[in-house]
Image (tube, rainbow, N blue to C red; front, side):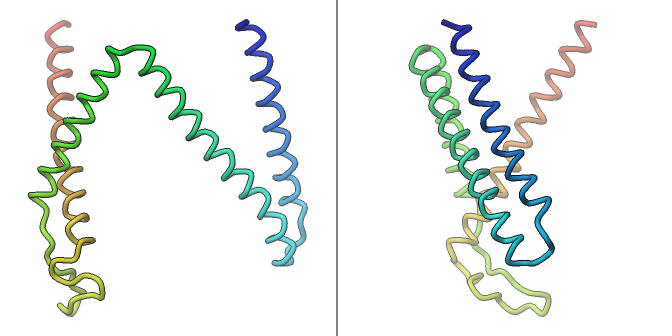
Length: 150
């Protein structure tokens, strides 16, 4: 069964690779006329977009399947998502919605005091900072453990 699946997967990858190569060659041999380049690049972009969406769907599907098959990992994942959500809420509470000013001190359009985009930018800056600090602490702990074992 596994060998059969491997052969089918190899054939699918080969077909997708050939399609990509043909589309790339089509773009490469196109004249420098903008209309021709545009008509040659369009299919390549569509194909690339399809591959991106397919990769996302397959990744999410296989990850979900793995979580369903192993309930212990599902608990750990849900706990991790819960912690991330708590950190996001804390970041939202810390983040501010101050106005966005240009070099002359004037408020930029859409950057008024209390704008939700300002709030979310501040939130995500704090969220990133908190995650970097937590990652840094665990990095140092791991480094110290490695030094102690040596």
